[in-house]
Image (cartoon, rainbow, N blue to C red; front, side, top):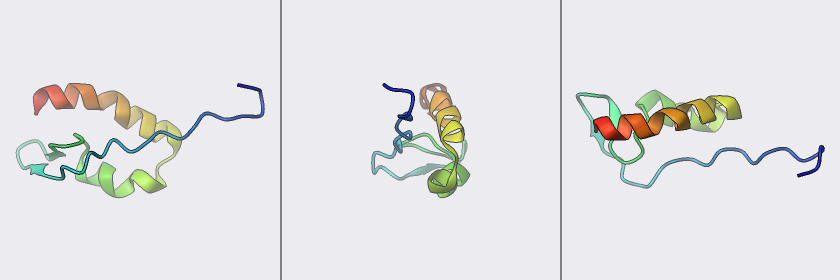
Length: 62
């Protein structure tokens, strides 16, 4: 990658299985919170990467 190219924005982790786990308040498909889902398209890339980094641990808890 050259110095003028920027990394691609993080992709949404949505897998179209949108079911909310009431106890943990996460989607059982993507493991994001309702707030994260609602804000995804307005989040900065660094915020999206921070959410994506948390998802594997959340999935283990679901």
